[in-house]
Image (cartoon, rainbow, N blue to C red; front, side, top):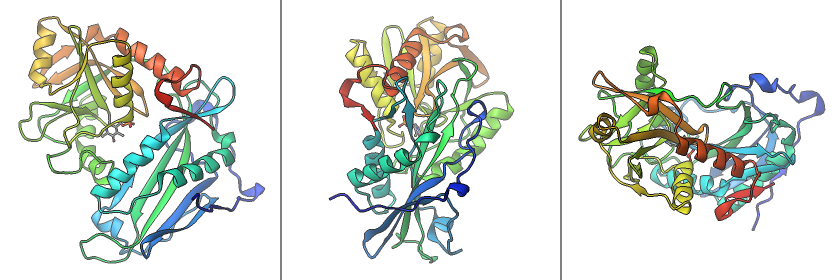
Length: 356
Ligand SMILES: *Cc1c(COP(=O)(O)O)cnc(C)c1O
């Protein structure tokens, strides 16, 4: 059964002017409408697409105190044919349900929410950018709204989807970044919530990112919390290494976010017959590979950047340069191929693409 989503369109004079596509940035402008539904008495109620607007929340709303908040991030892409495409959207909604389970929050019906999302995007299609590399970023979110200060699962929630046109991630080209390997901070612990997209993970990561940026680095590389030895992620991206003829990414251990871009890179490189493996890799192995000349590439993967090449790593005051600070050939090939798929410029493998 597909739920009955009420559509309350904003009046013409309430529509916002569209921002200049050259200065979109990330998450600065929001579209005219949003999708909202509320949870209470054991079910999701009153699904509606309405004007983008403020919420009214009780100051005791449980999300504000104990952080039951989860989110997703996905995109809509405008192809050369002017059609709108989405990349593995149901995988994002299914992952949101995994996050909901871990945070003792209610699950959503993936098919129904996907239908509502398509309705929302069609209504907002003029907001899907046309410039190369620019996209419409989609942020499904769920928060606990019940008023109360007991530490327990809330009984009331709000689910909403907001959307923002975002600029190309690489307006000046595909340039490798400088990474700081932190020994001081960890992102996630075994048994914790590192594998789910819950708000607190990002709050906890900000200090490390700020300190790295103050020292002149773009992002932090996270090591495991127990041994401070095995590589987990880079910033808010998964990470891959090319050492000799092996492509290596850390396994989904419970403290790593199971990225959809990560999974897509694994599937594509396997399709291409490359030697790719999910295994633990220590920071010492990476520096050793750099010293003996076998470290060929390092790159991050995530929806925002697709592929983010790493040019150098700083660990314990030692710097290892990767591929002379240049983008490697595998990073470039993956970036080009995944973008072609996402924008509908080629036939998608594995039924990844949905045309609106
Ligand atoms: C969202 C996210 C990723 C990347 O996931 P994608 O599905 O590829 O966008 C990786 N790590 C963290 C911590 C994340 O929040």
